[in-house]
Length: 111
Image (tube, rainbow, N blue to C red; front, side, top):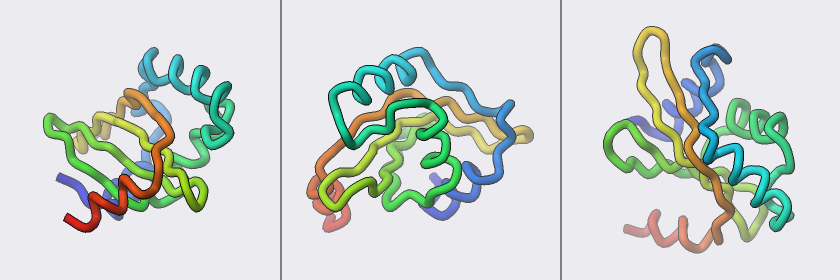
């Protein structure tokens, strides 16, 4: 299980060849960008967030899957579900993404 800093380090240093964007992820990006002002409207903008910004929270889901939370606005997080295997070479599959109220993350932090 990786920490937020470890996830950030992996994402900021990974080779583009080790990244796979699942069809579900791309479909959700397109759909949610149209209905939400919080979700960036294209893959390049998402890449900037995922590969250059440190997450504010990480929730391990098991089986190498993580929910990674990015602070997007004062009231909304962008949650990205990804599969990550740190090997040589590292492999990441971005599974889905969605906006979420910050208060849900803050409740998790209280536990």
